[in-house]
Length: 306
Image (cartoon, rainbow, N blue to C red; front, top):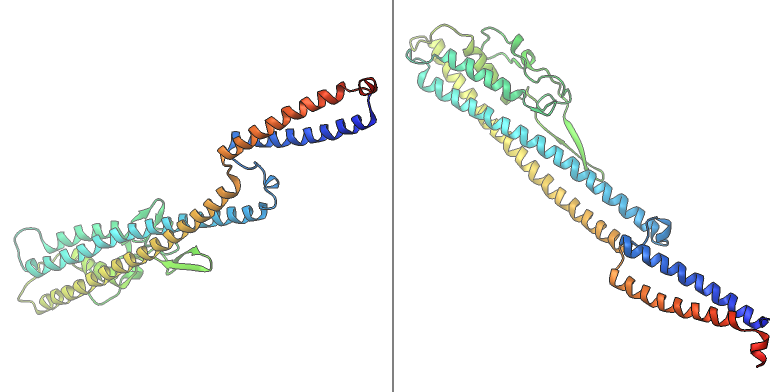
């Protein structure tokens, strides 16, 4: 029969054995997954910190994605505006040197071609969005159907061709930070270029240097185009500055995200070498516990009295 003291020892040893088995099982899981635990509960008391870090990481990624989208749109607009400025400069040179030249392509033909090109740039899309339509991104920014024929150089024609609204796009790029960005196709710089090109595109009468009105209109058109081209270039520069600022902000978000990710890994990850050493130690203790259990179970009052 078994000694009472031996029964107590056996019970205690079994309890200790179960604890060792539980620890060993946990270490085996950690080694196989590379993580401290697969659940937040298993990471207590750092679970709350991990939840906060994970939320921070997700929030930073959201800002990074938003900035990338805004920068893509700004880049698309910048390229289109650069071409618009070039169109203004091209036609300025055309009427400066060839307004009264009867040979070669007429001013009207050149104006018609450039007006079509200008319209395509003002209708630039980023995916399915018209980038120069304000907040009415599903509507074409430029529609020439209602432009006056032939029109003049003094009457604003924005309302005749612009299909968007005066809304300004905005985006949340940081906590409590919202940026407004973009340009609409009814911008005064664009409107002046459309006005000049539309006037000459619809003017079929050859220009005469002997006609004071023609001479005055050419001079006015040149001034309007030079001013408009400069204004568009300023818009391009402002867009580039905004892109640079957003890029810096994105870098800051990436740094914050990296810090959060590093902290998360510090909580979740397991040092495999350390875990393996601990497991080997536990296995040695388990083996010793098994031997103790066998020894205790083999003891009896008879053996004890011998």
